[in-house]
Length: 92
Image (tube, rainbow, N blue to C red; front, side, top):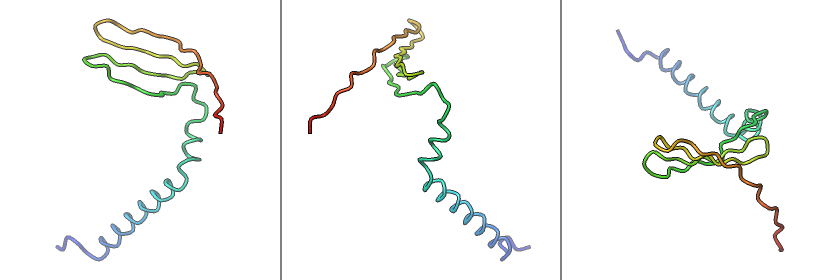
């Protein structure tokens, strides 16, 4: 009984070739796919920061508002609604 027959090698090569083609298609269409997957979401995780120990700060965007959430097991959770950043125009 032979472990690697020509049929098995061709099947494996075809499967790996198909995976490479799928990977390449995803890489080429990354932006449209990401836009399509993210459409309709009203909550976005902007950033997380580990504050040490068991504390963590999470910056969320929800329906045009930015919310800072500070979580800790010992002291609970604090929510702060942040004001929108002022729009500044760069003088070129």
